[in-house]
Length: 233
Image 1: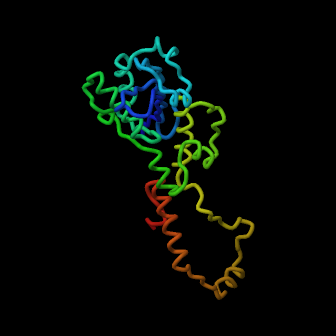
Image 2 (image 1 turned 45 degrees about the vertical axis):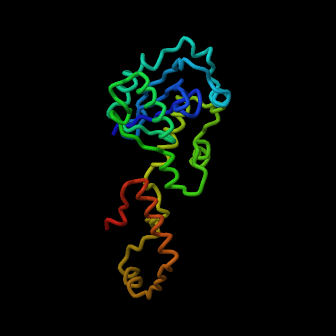
Image 3 (image 1 turned 60 degrees about the vertical axis):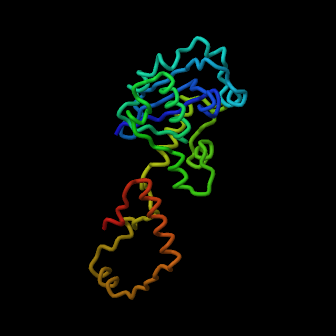
């Protein structure tokens, strides 16, 4: 499975108001392993950068003045993303900006979704942690991902952090809180087996509330892993 963890930085918040992409950072995962391949580019937006955006990413108009235009890199970007699943936090934002750039250059692909599928990790986090803060900083804290180097936003740095968060968030069914008795405590001789066989066991049945909580836990596991072995037995 090939996935591309992607992030962008922009001149502002809304492409419908003429705002543009100024940085794209992307990392390749194959079978949930970082391959070391990445795509990173700064872009000349041919317009000013809003003060609010500048305070977030710190990328100046002067720095971008000699950088390529989107039209010059679009084919390289689509070639890198093509055939993969794009992993993006708050995907509608980044996809909206990239699709706007495609429309401005009259590209044959009207949307990057024509060459790749999209997984929104914000929606995934909301499903896993309803009612909680699910921005990237909050998820880093929840999953103990080090983001101490993130004093400002940057597309490549944010993609690296998102990759760690995504892998932690979708790590699968690792521990159900169950354990087996150690081999030292196992009963090996026939006499002990005979005694155990005649014990009267007390059966404590789960309450309705406990059954509801159990089902909710299984649903969470199924969302993360795609299946629950318990339900297949």
